[in-house]
Length: 123
Length: 123
DNA sequence: AATATCATTTACGTTAACGTTAAGTTCAAG
DNA sequence: CTTGAACTTAACGTTAACGTAAATGATATT
Image (cartoon, rainbow over all chains, first blue to last red; front, side):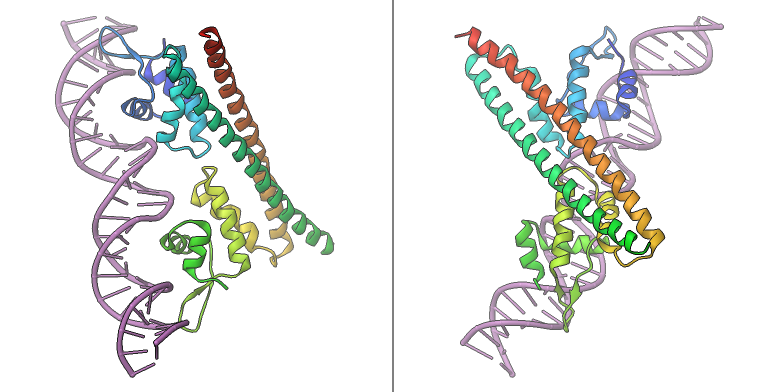
């Protein structure tokens, strides 16, 4: 069980950021006797997913939906099916993002080759 | 040569967004006799790069630096070398992003398999 | 038990990336 | 040449994602 400052340091963010994510319902750590937040392994895995999502321009609202995958494991069959379907859509989106990134990379490399060509011309 | 509304519609954004990007110095379209913005092919290619960058969580400040690749083609040798070096760093970063996205995809697929397993258990 | 260093909630402040409105200008159609 | 739609600048409004400060409570150390 980690304290909020340890968690913040672990992910390289402020404690405010962690509390804000709790405000939004993204995480819901246990509390100690004296109402102090205590983060378990599952909370940390969730936060890892959250910060990874952030790095790819997902909004916190979108991330909130993605994080539901973490919370719905003892739900009913119908709910599970929808969760799986939702997860499929998300991974499909990620595939698209990867493809687009590679296209972007290709364009930039094209530009670089042009420039290098010009450099060679100048000797 | 396209007008601002045509450009906005083409990319599915507001005209304000396009003007804002000009405010930041990201694009610099020609002007007609009567001071009306006219976007050429090069402006459109640049905007395409800009919106693609946005989809991956790059800030407009970061994008501004990336877009410099478009503007510096008749600069001097030293400048060209630095541009090429900068471009290399950017493509390396994109490689990292791709790798991380694939890791993310793997994690989500792992979760999905767990859920599907549970679905099979429930018959 | 006092002191220092953490924690808590509450609430207002900040910045990026636009949205929106106002007041005026240009362009295409009739 | 006028009328209406689309353009212009200028300026203030908005929202997400936090930053920061105040007042207070918990915890560890000496």
